[in-house]
Image 1 (tube, rainbow over the protein chains, first blue to last red):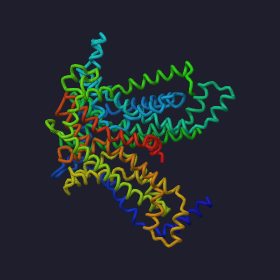
Image 2: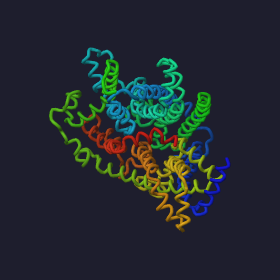
Image 3: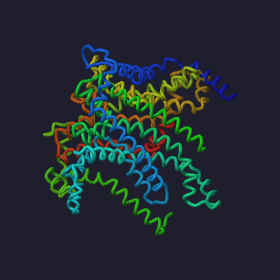
Image 4: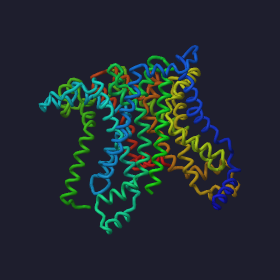
Length: 301
Length: 278
């Protein structure tokens, strides 16, 4: 404590030479993007703003309409249907990959790179390959037909049920390499001594995993969950690339519905009401998670 | 480690198989981009009979496909580079100022930046759009750059603040004692030490900006200034089922990031794995 006061005094000395005004541009940009604009957006959510001209305050009408309109309600449900399994499985596969590729393999570095590379690609671009594979005349159905499994052929992207699953699958395919490298960094931070000590004590491999690896990966779990929750709830690119929200809007998500209502249908007020719902959803889930997860981390360590 | 046991050999073979299945979409991507449209349909699984490079030249110069991927590539590069430059300049200055003026106001601003990273920014899109439209910056590179500078500022300040807090001040003190003013000590003493953290900030921001679709669709679609995601989207809606063309365009749009990865490898992985925790 004493040293920090001392350090602070020292910093003040230098601080006298560092002008305050240099902080202004960064703060102004951040304020515009993350305070002023979202607040004004939140206000538009309660209006019938159409992008130009006059607009009126209409109270909760936008939200009432969202809950009364089947297609918009689907957007909310689909978002949850996609995000919840996505968060679970992207953690599971990321962890499994990280453990499988952590050591012992001669090819581990190149394999890790291959799993990681989709995570740095433009989602809308790389999704086109999946659109091709899953197309009714695409390689997947062709393969099934040639293998004598013609009855399994489906219009994968044209049916809302399979379409939603395909969106989920492509999200998982693109992001599991990302969660893998976070878990990989977590594994690398665990000291070998712990395993050696446990091995001397005669702990079996499973027990070492259960009582050393898992608890010490808790911080990585927190990072992956936080990151992937935002990714999952905001899903837009895969929807646009694979199904284009179709058929008849049955695979749209909150983000894609926001885009469609605002920029295709020019219903700016209604669109921002959807965006407000998305923001509230992400914030609430984020706050809940960070309280639960930080408590869990404390308990474990 | 160097010699296979039966068990390690089986494990290696299993993982290689899993990886090959995982990466199989890239086989379709590359082989079909080098076939004619007809051949891509008749023979989707096989290797191309002869390498047909014309799809690449067609999407790059826009002959007959009404798409200009050379231009889109340039626009994406300019927008990303411009945003990165402004973010690094203003982000580092803000972080430096805050970290050298410790106190309640600085701590409060720091928390503000952290919250800004997490809250999704779609909500602010409409007001930013109408504001930029009123000053004629929708559909322009500068407008797009300003949007990204606003969006990515919190993350950038967060990264630099973490760095400056742990940076020992002895060098700056020495510079002050030698009579250097702020500008001199920042440029000659602080900036050379910022190299690593600037690398992290550049990588994280370029990944976000280069790969982002929604903002670019909102601000640039239908304009003269189209970036890679926007051009990909319009190509796929106009050229349905001409997969050789679409895939050539997809490869053009993915290559710059793959090249960046090949040059940075571990640094990029580490930035993504650890960047958000600081």
